[in-house]
Image: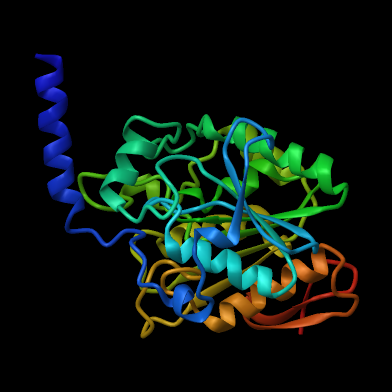
Length: 302
């Protein structure tokens, strides 16, 4: 009987989710930076998760956390775009298989049966412990500061990984928590970040400047969530809210916005010591003013 109820619930949720675009990619990054899995090397010794690394790169390390649909071709293409900019990119496989692009399957693998708490306001996700171990292994190898990019259901997770060598974090369309039956966040979920209280407190104690990105039209990452980020982190966080006419969700991958990617790259290069001069942002705002990432690695309004 238990299995029968579970199968019924899976079928019902699948029907509801089928109408949601979620993080299903539209392949803009794949058009910009064509790639395939052969361009990546599998490393099984960088902690508890399989990790795919871009080949033939030696620049600052970026840990790229894939979206709910899985480690899709668009996510691999974003890694290639970053590699083309001189970064060494590491992609932990948190669920599913490489090249997976299935939102419904990804939901069940990550939220329903996996290590993500997708609905609690401040539950925190067990996957953070594995990601922390993976970051530590990469830090042990590179012995240099690293950056983290989270996207969709992993969008806010970089906040839980700050410090101990993690010196840059890009938060792309953080989607947790949400109500799966209604296809998006409701009530208090709209302002929540899906992190535990302890994780959020550690992030607040950190001095690391942050960058957050969303589409204004994206109901999966509502404006209230960015208001929370600005309230908590103040002058430490610059935000990009891509204009309402440009509809999309996956800001740097499936629905890639070139100017947002440019800002993210410049932020990461300055923060990780690859760029030695201030870099003005194209879209990012600090307290609703144009800004730059200064030579001291901090945001400055212009």
